[in-house]
Amino acid sequence: MDAVSPAAIAAAPFRIGAAAIAGWSAYLLGLARRGAGPLDIVDDAAALVNVLTDRDRPGWAHPWPVVRHWPLARLRDCTVASPSAAGTVPTLLLPPQAGTDSCIVDHSTERSQVTALHAGGLTRLYCLDWLPATAETDGASIDEHLAVVAESVAQLGGRVNLIGDSQGGWLATVYAALHPGQVHTLTVAGAPTDFHAGRPGIGLLGSLPHGAGAAVAALLYDTGRALGVHLTDPVGEVQRAMDLLAGLDDPDVIVRITEQRRWFVWRQPIPAAFRDWIIEHLVVGNELAGGELVVGGRRVDLTAIGCPLTLLAGTGDLLAPPAQVHALAALVGTAPERITVYTVDDGHIGLFVGRRVLSERWTPIASAVAAGPG
Figure (cartoon, rainbow, N blue to C red):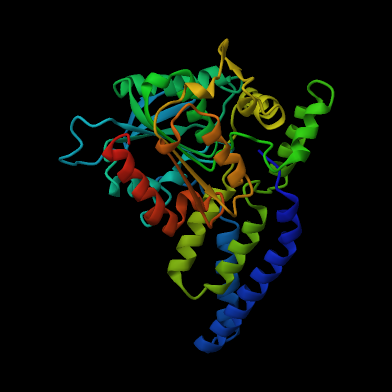
């Protein structure tokens, strides 16, 4: 729900141009290599249109059973059999929620954060699966979302390793600050704590009359969604289309990009009350970093967090730049030697589905968490 940086906006035409040149060049070379004729080009065009117009709902790569259900979410048991799992602290994964389906954490059999965590030893793993807002839940507050987390933690024994992606990251942070005794370790990926770091223009919205700044931010958000602009990386949509063009002769490429676009295009509304609260108190007010955030009548004191902390950010993340993610390290009560900070060369969604990030970062992170607090 944040705005992209001026540098990213300026670079957008160059990224689009480079993607278009690469896509069309690869496609034309592929036509020559295949000795394709007019009918082949017609078939290619039909395949391209089919993928770009696909609007099927994305799904989980594995059939993880649902063990608890609320109007706002489901709790999925992603545990796999392991001799070392008995007696270990369970892990609770909070996926992104801002208009997207939670299955991004189990995107495909080849690109699954859940599988990467298993590989690192977090085999006693559970994941929240946020549900689309309905007339019944459209007024759900931050308190009700945190209640889902609290009831999940209670069901898992009262103490968990908490991992939060994107919006799930700051939600996990808030929960850990309010309930530090229930969080064994905290891992946050692609989630802002300081929403204004490197984005002074966002802070200016706070100087508008009360409520006006949040109204402007909400209008921009709603307009972008109505136009089909993906706020995580709008230019990436063009790049994916060009990647598809370049690989129309490869069935694996078609399947992969269909899965990617299906997740990006699918819109899952979040409760309007929750969205408005996020914009007013976090995006515009920046109250989490400022120590002014109050939830359920309690101030969210980040210094109450004393457990081992891992932070993961991407240099190409337009939604949550590294400065906004890494800011949490200076605000918690965790000793510096128990804080691990990673920066990878990837974008926002790449933090959760990128092959290299999954194998080179998430699996080692899981190994460190499974080994116990340092």
